[in-house]
Length: 202
Image (tube, rainbow, N blue to C red; front, side):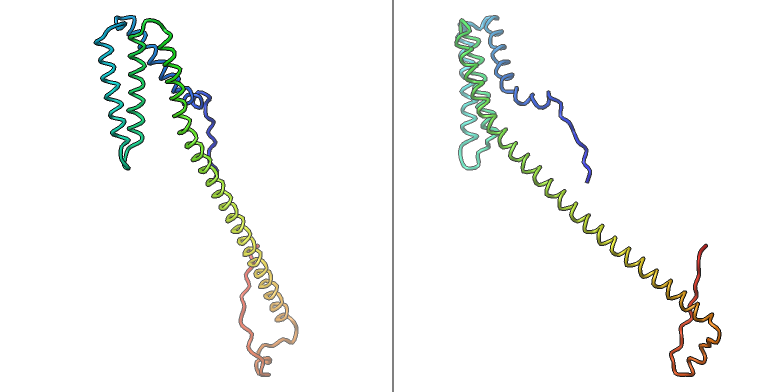
């Protein structure tokens, strides 16, 4: 019943919240590095990124089509499409204005999509904790009932042992009285007393 308490480090709690910003920032930085190494105004590089982004978008559309569409694959494909588009613009554009604008938009969209999953995870976590609390209370109630029942049984057994001891002592004391003869009692029509052996531990 006693479960170990695990204290999460603050980095483990904040890392998922910073993941979307880190992802889009990494793409922007790599795009600007690509820009500085010759991608600026390169038609071939821009065409490559357009083809890759279009392919990722098409893969996401196919993955999400139909009733049996996989939302994880579709989300990954669309996120890849957005990352490729951001990298292409950051590598092709002259200044930082357009890449920064796209970075802000991509970060906002990423946080909007992530917030949905965070809310779902939070609801599942709260439901799980509530279920565990109910189980703990149920088990604690069962343990209390069993403890009361065991205590009552022990008390009954103790009272029975005390009664048996008192009865044995009374029979022994009566047998020690002068003039007591169990044979005469039997001849008089009374039932025969059972032979009782009393052992005491000192």
